[in-house]
Amino acid sequence: MHKNDHASSDAGGLKHCLGLLASMYSRLCAEPATPITSRAGGRRDGSQVIERLRIEDVRTAWDGGSGEKAARSVPFPFLELPCLQPDFAIERLEPESYARLVAYARRRDVTMNDILLTAFYRALLLGANPRLAQPALLTEHVPVQVTVDLRRYLPGRRAESICNLSGIVTPLIKPVLDEPFEGTLSRVSAAMKKHKAHSPGFKTTLLLELYSRIGYSAFLDWLVGNWRQSMKHRSSPPLFSNIGMISEGKIAFGPCLAIDGYMIGPAMQAPSSLIAISTYNQRLTLAMAFYKPAVPVSKVTAFLKCMIREMHTCI
Image (cartoon, rainbow, N blue to C red):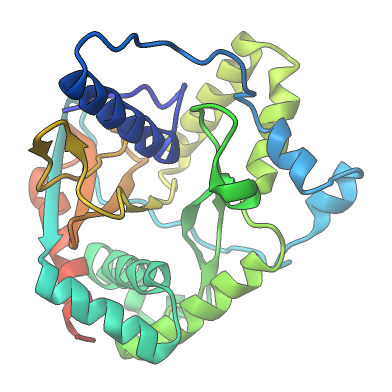
């Protein structure tokens, strides 16, 4: 197991780190006397993204977006109990089912991220929070926070150094009673395409650049203030993070091949939560880290199983 502090690197950086570790171990297995050197330098902040996007007027860049207004946030179910012990749960889609899902995405001309986000959204509204399916609430758009790897804007999708380059977009989806999976998928795909037209996720980088100038202490106060506000209103929406493929092929540490693996995101205190999705060796893993007893294990397991069931409806 490899652990990484999210303050220093996100999942994209961790995937790069795993590749470097595998390469280093393989070299040492072949030539034990090989010297190991570190490469210093390389920016670890979002300035490389801002520079690549050629953002000159921050105000104009900030104004781009969907223009929609969210009316209701949806927290993951939790209890009025303290967050005492971190834990995690996973559910998996085996290679045969994963291959059928990939084929389905191609036929529908949508991305795997669209399908996963659709399953997440349907499980959240219809499984975790069935009361949201009431007709009186169907007029409101529901925001879902989605992470974006900002390396997409960099040459070769590689940052100058291992770092955290995660952004967040918030598509707004309107609940539709008794809607089939394909209907929700069409609307989710359209919402994500709308965000992709406006350099998705870079606003997070702009915020971090601004707060980096006020110092760590002030930035931490801001984060804690936001968390307390979420606790007060019990309305922090879950975060959806599709890490994607950990590696195109099997990762080799010398003669040893890693035949299975997945990534788990950080445990977040209720009412916040995060679902991390990763794929390795054609096996897709849904993972959620959380704190007990505020978030019951049974609720997490039921939610992940609901996502798997939703995906099975289209394969």
